[in-house]
Image (cartoon, rainbow, N blue to C red):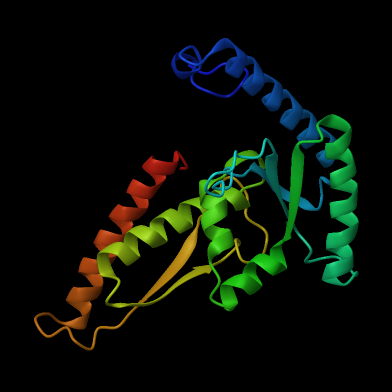
Length: 222
């Protein structure tokens, strides 16, 4: 059972009292930020997530900052992406400062996320997979479970995987909490001699679908 901090009660009770209160206050501040941000940019914001703390440099104390990622849909804006990003970021930073100066906002336009994927840069996907959603229209959950599933597939079949591709409503920025998550897995079967292509396809499909179910259980996303 969880309480207002969003942390399971049995875990929270084991923490020192001062830490418990600090976590509760952070949750309140994040809820305030999310509410204010959505009041201004509900149409544009696809998701808001708490990012994991960065690894501190050796010999240095970790910074007491609260990193928040805001994923924004820039598909319908008439502004250049950099102007869209600059405008939203300025307003969201102002909102955050008025609530808690330790909240650091990172704004990510959807087009920028996909461009990173086209360029073979997947760090942002990994970051989203490790984040804790505060608000989600479906996009963050879709990316999170797809990233977990992709890693499972690559770990099992890395030698044979040519591409793992997202498709459908996700890449169009139209994902909802009930959307299907469409993926393509391209396999290099040139070295497979012991079975027909049809047999190989059926066997891999069954394994990969099983991994999708497991990824859903690991992330709590259905």
